[in-house]
Amino acid sequence: MRRVVLACALALAATGRAEEAIDPREQQLELLRAEVASEVQLQAAELIDELVYGWTLRAPFDVDTGVVLAGVSVPVSLGTGLEAYLETHLAGLVTRNPRTHLQLVHCPSCSAWVVHSGATGTVVSRGFDAPEALAKAGLSSGAKHALFLDFEAEGSSLVLRARLTTLDASLRIVSARTLSTATSAPAMLRESERLTSVAEARKSYLEALGGRGLFLVPVRIGVRSYAPGTQTSINTTPFLWVSAGLEAAFSQARAWTASMNAAFSWLPQSHVAVMAQGRVARLLTGNSTSLTWPDLYGFVGAGVLFGQGRGMLIFRNTNPTIDDVLNTNTNNEPRATLGILTVGLELRVKNRIGVSVFLETLPVIETTDNIGTYVDVLVRFQSFGVEVSFCF
Amino acid sequence: MRLASLLLLSLSAAGCALDPVLFKTREERRNLDCYRLAQADAAARFPGQVPPQPARQIAGENTDVLTCSTRYLRVDERPARDEAILSTLSAQVAGLAETAAALVAPGARWHVDAFYPSLPVAQKIAVAARTSLAERGLEVSDRVPTLTAGDVAVLATLPQSEVYRVACARSFSTSVMGPDDVFLGLMIVDPRETALHAGLCQRGAWRWLP
Image (cartoon, rainbow over all chains, first blue to last red; front, side):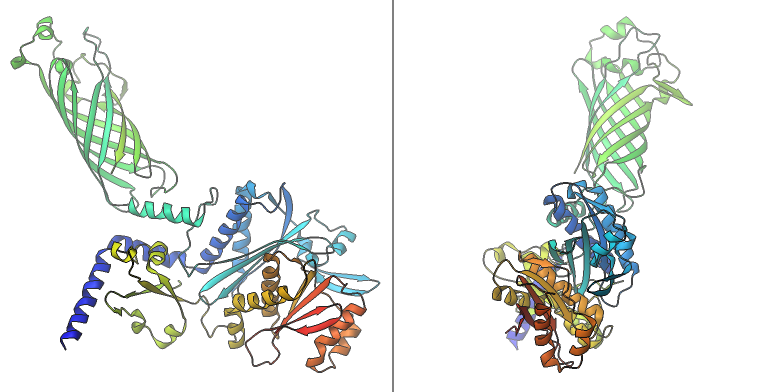
C-alpha cells in the first residue's frame, strides 16, 4: 500500500513538473494554432511550400523552363475544390520564387481528352499522355515538361508525390520527389515570397511566440531639440534623454499599447532633468503586428518635466536676463516644471527594436517667445525629438 | 476543423503515463494514429504542449512522448480495402520498388502500371511506384505500354494467372516494349487481400517479385 501511494505521489509530482514547465499562454496559442494549421488544405499547402523551397535551393532546370501544370490529384474521396486551391497556391509560389527556374505555361489541351488515330490504332488519352498527338494537331503549348502533383492521405500523414516529365514520346521522369507531413506537426504556414526551411520557420515561430508577451520593458535613448525663440539670444541646446518604463498591450495582436516611462537628462553646466510620460499607441499598418515586416505605430502622450540648471531658463515665461545667465549660485539655480503633450510615429521590428519621431507642445510656455515653433497646426509644437528604443 | 494532435506523456521517471485516450469514444480511438517520439523531438515539434527535456534527462535518462493524431479520413469514409491499401501505400510501394530495382541491371527504362478494381486507387499506386523508382535514380517513363484492342480481348478470356505472362510476351513480340524496357506491374491477386503484389516484365519474360 505504501508503495502504491508513493508511486502516485511521484506521478503527480512528475506531472506537476511537466505542467509547470509549459507556459499556459504558449500552450493555448499552440493548441489554437494547431487546430487551424492541421487543416488538410494547409498541410497540403505546407508540402507545396517545402517542394518549392527545395527547388529554390536546387532548381530542377538550369535555365528558365516552361512547364505545364498537368495535374493535381488530391486524396481519394476529397473534392476537387482542393485541387483548384493547390494549383493556385503552387502558381503563386512559383511566380514569387524565380530561383526555381520554372515558368508555368497555360495548356488547356494538355488536360483534355484527345483521340489519336494512327497506323497502330486509335488511342484515347489525355493530352499530356500523347504530346505527339498534340503537336500534330497544332495544340502544343511549346512547353517541354509537365508537372504532376499527387496528394494522398496515408493515415494521419499527408503525402505529396511530385514529378516532372518530358512532354515528348518518351514521357521520361526528369525529377521526382516524395514529401510527407512529419507526424502531423502543425503546418508552419510559411510566407510565400521568402520561403525558408521548416527548421527556420519553426525557429521564427518560437521566437515570435516567446516575444509575444503582453508586457514589454522599453528602454529609449532620444534627443529633443527646441525651436529657437525670436525674443532671446539664448540658443537652446538639444536635450539627451534616457528613459525606461513598462508597456502593456491590450491583446496579443498589439494593435493598441499603453506605456509609462521615467526619463532622465543631464548635461554638465546646463541642466539635470527628469520626466514622467505616458503614451497610448495604435498600430497603423494592420490590426496585428507582423512577424516579418516592421510595424508602424502612431502615438499620443502626456508627461511632466522637472529640471534645474541654466538650461531650464528657456522654459520660463519671462525672457532670461544676463543676471539669470551669470548666476552661478547653485542654491538659486533656475528650475522649471512643465507639462508636455506628444504626438509621433514609431517604427518597430518584431517588438524588439524601434525608432520614433515626435513633436511636442509645451502648453505652459505658449505665451512666451523663448522657444520658437516648429509646426503650428491648431497647437504650437515647440519641440522635435527622435528616439531609438529597445524592448525587453 | 480537424482535431489537433493529442499528446500523451510517458514519463519514465514517474513510471506511469497520462492517458487522454481514455476520454475518447471507441470510434474516435479507431481514427487515431499514434507515434512514439523522443521527448527532445516532441518538444521541438509541439512547443507549448511538450516541455523541454530536463537537464538530468539530457544527461542520460530517456523519456519519450506518444503523439496521437486523428486520421485525415475516417476509417469508414473509403472502402475498407482501399483504405487499407492507401494507408500503407508508401511502405508497400517502397518495399516492392526496392526489390524490383535490385533485380534489374542499371540502364533499363522503367514503365509502371497498377491493376486494381478502383481506377483512382490504381493510379495512386502507379504514381507512388513511379515516383519511388525515379527517386532511386532510375530512368522511369510515364508512358504505359498498351496492347491493341484485339490483344486485350484475348487476354480477357484467359485465367488471371496467365494474363500477365501472356501480356508480357505479347508486348515484347509486338515491339510495344523494347529490350531495354522493363515493366513493373503492381496488383492485388485476390480481391479480398490488402497486400500489393508486383511482377516484372523484361524481354518478354514475366516474373513475380518475391
